[in-house]
Amino acid sequence: MTQAAALDFPTLIFASVCIAGFLGVFLIINWMQQRDVGALAWWGSAYLIGAAAITLWGAPDQIVKVPVVYAEALIFVACGMFWNGLRLFYGRDMRLSFSLAGAGGWLVLTQWPTLEEGSPHRVILGVTIVALYTFFMAFELGRERRKSLYSRTATVVVPLLHASIFLMPLGLRAWYPEVFATRWQTVFAVETMIYTVGTAFIVLLMVKDRHVHFYRKAATTDSLTGLFNRGAFLEAARNMHAVQSGRGEPVTLLMFDLDKFKSINDRFGHAVGDSALKVFAKVLQDSTRASDIVGRLGGEEFVAMIPGAIEDACVVAERLRVNFQEAGVVIDDIAVGATVSSGLATTYRPEATIDSLLLRADEALYRAKNSGRNRFIAADEEPGTEAARARWAARNKRADGKIGRFAARRGSQAAAAV
Image (cartoon, rainbow, N blue to C red):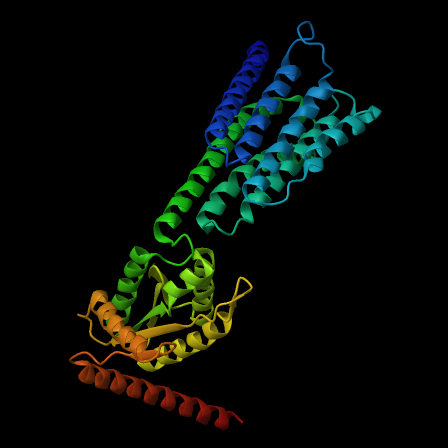
């Protein structure tokens, strides 16, 4: 049984070297194909350094005459590099000194007689350093708020489990003092192989998810302004209309067009024209609510859809008109004096389409342009709107009555309690 275990451990060492080396090369190749993801180079290098460390640590003295303390220090360097790779991937400051802190501390502390090779205290120090690096990795993964809760949980569990297994013998020593002299090192080796493969899958999935998010955003976002593009806006607007129709409530579409935009381009250049579009996009976002949908249809045309009646939309349109008139006075240090006109169209009818709303809003916008620009005009009501508006008002009146009776009842109860 002892011979089998003795033969088993070198096999595990060899397998660990092969796995870490293969994954390191694989990640480096991925980095060469995706130079924009520099973290892949750090992760690949960490795996290669880990493979070299395991080789130096497990090789017989007759083949490699390197003090084992240096091989062990390289393992901590690999852990620090992997952690730095995570920080680089998420756009955080890298801490190169932290990558070397574990190795430096190890080289200094192992000079103490109580931490000589083979002592339990030396093993405790080693597993503690590895566990600390792993906890820091879990922290970097867990604090990334751009991922869903499910994704954060899935990626954090793996390093936390690894750290827990490494720290488990520390708790067992009280009842089992010889725990480090048993096959626990074999458990470390097997679990580390599994963890090595698991973390490689995690980082590759992270890179894949980032690319998917990038291409999805590119497909739905206007590259100049960061707003929804035409297709994404229309899809979101249809969804809002369906939800509002299910509640029997109206939606209002606002179409905007920058006044004399061609003249701005001709007089000041296309760069200033692009800046004017970006300024308006920011004003549009700042002047609307989180529940509203905003987008760019193309050129100097923008659009918004809000849940609510024409009265709410008029407030939004006027606020936006005033805000942009102020923001458009000077653009890129040039007196531009940009303004905007808008057309509004409301529907209460479930059978109405977004295309029909766009058409009505466009007609109102055309009238606003012909009336002198820098203003908004609401479209004429569509057929059947009067009856739908009456039903909506009656329902709101009933709801207000219920709220009033509830408030009165609560007030009576409070008075009685006093």
